[in-house]
Length: 190
Image 1 (spheres, rainbow, N blue to C red):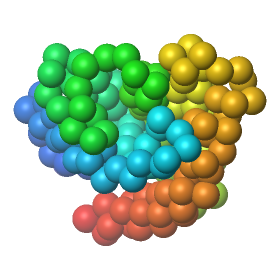
Image 2 (cartoon, helix red, strand yellow):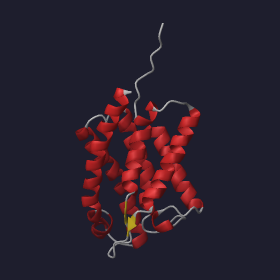
Image 3 (cartoon, rainbow, N blue to C red):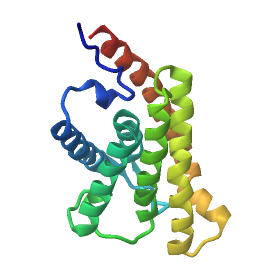
Image 4 (tube, rainbow, N blue to C red):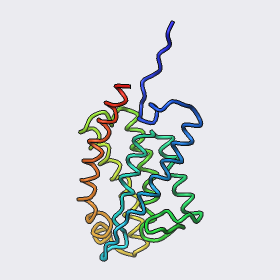
């Protein structure tokens, strides 16, 4: 009698192992986001830099699923608040105009992870939809935080903290839409 393994729900499930695998994935996901945060371009007209963090957050959440994705982003956030300088521009601590986006990363990992567990990374168009929802989760926390810290209204907060990033978000969505279906094809061949 042979025993078959359940099909992986997210890409992280395709890696063999149990608790040690999960811990490594959580810590690795936090590190990926920390490294991506260092690819930061300051924009002179807004306190929010252009980074690769959002792409990393969405990839981590979708690859690891809800529990591991949220844990990974909580580790990233808490370690950065504790003083490790791995937020954008080698900063740490809480507060500041862009810290709301860091908090939004946790929400995005939860939303994206849950949708990925339901198969939303299996095709390019579903992946695009998943990434749009993930970006909206980041902005849903980041823009109001920016409003409060910068003391600006909704229109100005959108002009400072959302509009300048839409083209980059579209590029990131296209990358993810190609990455996930290709990764699933590789997993299927294994």
